[in-house]
Length: 152
Image (cartoon, rainbow, N blue to C red; front, side, top):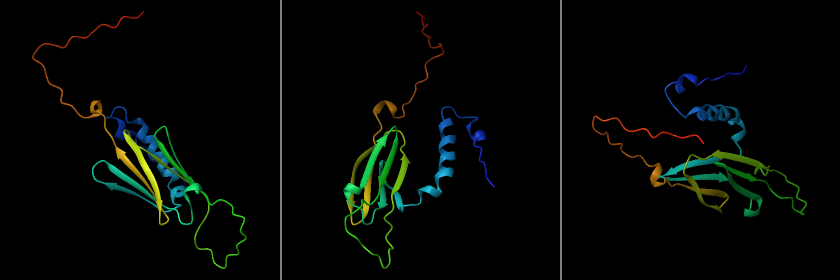
C-alpha cells in the first residue's frame, strides 16, 4: 500500500518554494536506499557542516566525490585485488555504494579527508553580500516610479 503525501496546502501562501515538494517526495522514495554506508550529517557553528561516512577498508582511490548542479555525490567500492582470500567470517561490508546530498544555496565543499576508516567532507555556507537580508526603507507618500520597458 503506497502512501502519498501532498504538501500543496503549505505552498498556497509561499512563492518560489515549489521545488521543496519535489525534494520531500524524492526523500521519501530514497530513504531506504540511503542507509548504506552509515553516515552522519553534522552542524558545527552557524555556517559550517560536515558529512562523515563510514568507509572501513576503503582507500582514497576507492572513493569518488563529485559536486554537480547543487548535488554532492559520493561513490565508492572496493577495487578487485589479485589476492585470493577465503573469509571465515566477513563482517566488514565492502559493497559498492552511492550517496547523494542536495546542497542548499551558497554551500561550498571545502575539502575531504579519509582517516581511521571515516571519510569527512567539510562544507561551508558562504552567503554573498547581495543575498544577505537588507532593510527596505519606506518612502514618503509619493508612489515609486515604474520604468517603462520598451520592446524592440
